[in-house]
Image 1 (cartoon, one colour):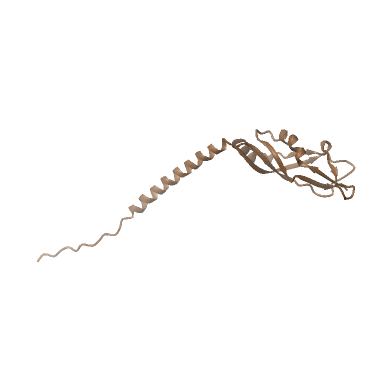
Image 2 (cartoon, rainbow, N blue to C red):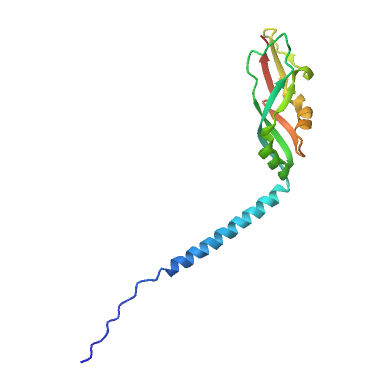
Length: 151
């Protein structure tokens, strides 16, 4: 009598997984490519954003010193094309903006000692716009008021 060969189901081949893996890699590549094109397209439009920017204070009154530390960084709210804002965020922190006390109109605070003063930062926008060397423009600065005291 002839012996019949038994039929055994074969184990699934792992090629299906590698096929799915290849599809996933192709999908991920085109997803990344579409993100890059979307990002480049959005950089061409005008945007509003904020950036934390370093400041330096110069020409303090020689007979007086500042009692408190003035902030070393301020938030600049910018409006401009995405490319100029991106360039500002990447390279802008290298050179701080200069606030010149000799050109400021600082005012004494009310109901306080005569050594307490404040500066409204909206008055600095035109001067700081000329310092940033970018196509984007500063729309506002935070904090909106800098308080300080002379010793």
